[in-house]
Length: 126
Image (tube, rainbow, N blue to C red; front, side, top):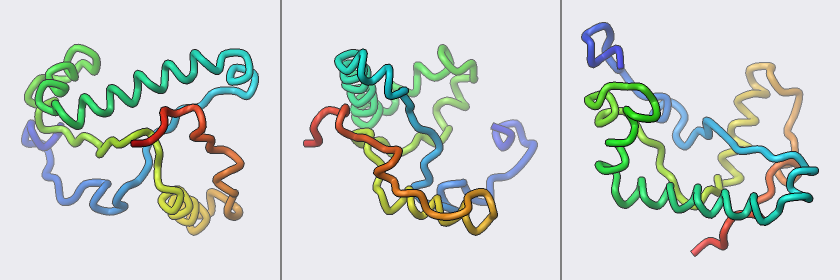
């Protein structure tokens, strides 16, 4: 955004520095999952359909960004969009990120991904 206003210059993106970095996740408590499994599945089906829409209709999808994110249309049309697939992140990528956190002293050691990631509520992958 700053680059568009002449206040800075993009040298490289975060994705250039750490390709495939996972910026966000979605969390449900065990209690909520147990009490509302179909709501969780329905929500995730909608989310994956949204990912598919962004992937197949990027320009149209970008037109919604100003309404929901409060940015100007020119920014929305140029901002980086993540590569969305089916909601699953490669396990190796998550371990790579853990290694970065370990190297920087933010995590004492690797945590088994299976201890905190459960893709079973997502729609079946194609």
